[in-house]
Image 1 (tube, rainbow, N blue to C red):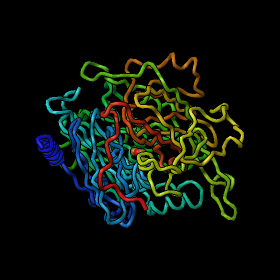
Image 2 (image 1 turned 180 degrees about the vertical axis):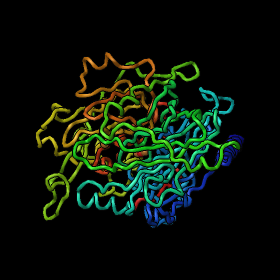
Image 3 (image 1 turned 45 degrees about the horizontal axis):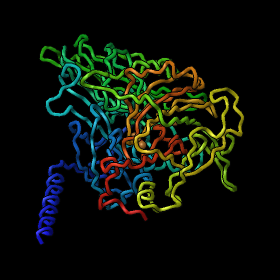
Image 4 (image 1 turned 180 degrees about the horizontal axis):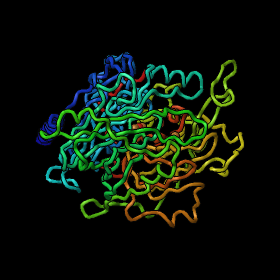
Length: 575
Ligand code: C2O
Ligand code: CU
């Protein structure tokens, strides 16, 4: 009797605790819906969050957990991903469609728990179904925990600067064409800075984003490359930039004239307003696109930096802004010049923990390929074939086509037939990956839902090797659920005897997205301390649509606190 009442009391307290912690969490409301936007002289409906484009900024403190109540009031399936938020033990809210959840259907709602842990700086959120992230995205600002400060002098003001990409056409149509024709995607009509093409484009001067600064003050630009298809160069005329962070982690400050930023990547950049205040200055971004014979959006997007103050006559507001010079579109050396300067702080307040004894060595190629055109169809890919892309010659197939479960749900509930565990640790065939005139038969990948299973606590070194199949180009590879140390990179084929000797194991940057250079490789290290199902893919949208992806399953550890938490009751239903 006594025991039962104790138990009830205990359960009561437990229940109260759960209730209290849930209530204490801050909620944000995201309503996904269509809204009309006018750009480049024409108006179209786009998918938005809360009618905003870019969407609302989430402000949190390091280590906080928040709940985002996502309502789908659009006519389109949607999922939302918190890019760079590692979601310890809780892949349920991670968001990639058919990897960790089925989509939120029109009229549906999903309360997503967003669990911040070690991240501090700038991250972002975006849709993770088809190409809807083109317009469904926004910034996440992670402030230092209470009582902590930035590792640099407190800036006067902070400004999210989101680089995006705009098609006059409906992106749903652009995506459908890519899928149905098997050809390359239609190129966009402009890039955007905070949702605006800038005044070099028609009908765009009134809405151009303007940053008003006070002379002598320092500003923190929280930059995000939310564009779909290209790495971007960005610079501000006459002003140097000091890079202080990337991907929600600080770096040793370094000064540059321009930055290169990959789709998926974020950069925290200090701007000193120290130039003649009567002048105006363009901030400008344009593509870095090195693949031979690949058409891309070669336009320049701009915003305007102008000074304010009671002595500045309003006539200075009409001066023609200075234009920064940006590297040319195929300048690979200028592109890698920025990533090669990244070093983590690696000091007492920001310790690093680079895995030294590697238990799991992985070597993955990333390639552009073709698949034969199905009988009776017309395909617009190379020589009448379908475009494809692969990792270790497997073109990743989302399980949606044959199944009604996400990979996570199938794994958690032991449902077979959704995926296979045979993703290879090395390419099935070795060849001169970055050589020229590669033989055609190397280009036909397998098409499967293959995952790589990792034990809890493994120390992984993954070398990602670019190839010159079809067209060597850069691939910004993004890993969900874990940040990783970028310990090395180089051009050409990775050499397992020589290249590790030049690794940076002292202060490598800690990232969630890394651009594999054109016809080159990168080496990353991480420890699997986050059980769950985690997607890894190229953040160039056409490449991931073509299958440049892999899924990791990180198994539970032995202790309860090394195990996945149970799913929430409102997981979107799979049909
Ligand atoms: Cu920012 Cu899987 O994506
Ligand atoms: Cu790619």
